[in-house]
Length: 213
Ligand SMILES: N[C@@H](CCC(=O)N[C@@H](CS)C(=O)NCC(=O)O)C(=O)O
Image 1 (cartoon, rainbow, N blue to C red):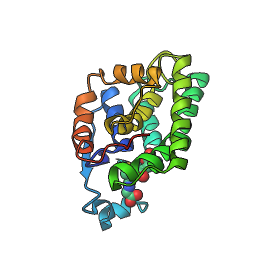
Image 2 (image 1 turned 90 degrees about the vertical axis):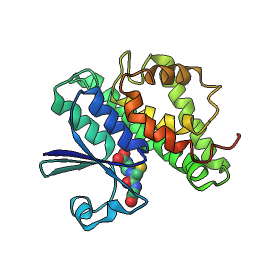
Image 3 (image 1 turned 135 degrees about the vertical axis):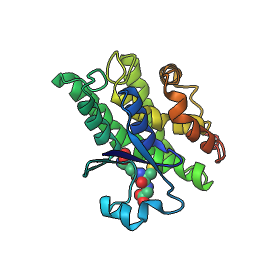
Image 4 (image 1 turned 180 degrees about the horizontal axis):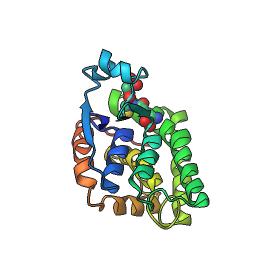
């Protein structure tokens, strides 16, 4: 049996996997994990995943961690080829954008936005520079093509969308990023956007907005 474990509040990586299952038209059982209640640290969960992270995917005992790896695996398994094509160059471009997300965008978001939104901390100017740099890079990418890795939507768009939406829903000011704004407005028109993002949007609206910058 295949089961996908995601955090109940649907922070960024779990939501990206969930959106991917919908984009691929895959009907996968999902289990909601309440991090605040420590459900990711129960003996049963730790047995599958000693790193106690979500998302996690369990395909008949084959356990996979890391959202981007799970998304790629699901795309390959589904046989659908537009989100993660087989062509070496197209795939390499998507991989490079996903690495940008994992290595640059997500760490900047975690250090800059998470403490403000989740712990009500003041913005850290150094971390703010990293966030601006990551957003400037994203704007540059979207200046080159309609989507993040070319002219069609791929896994890179879904992964980065979930991170950008954390900032967006926390009222970050995107006025100097017209390309990101246009791309984001397009992504929220996806037919499965509401189903996969509503709980997150409701949850984040109960948190502290990003402070002025
Ligand atoms: N790079 C990982 C990040 C996974 C991650 O850190 N998830 C957080 C929730 S957003 C988590 O599991 N936190 C609980 C913990 O680390 O104990 C991915 O993309 O899947």
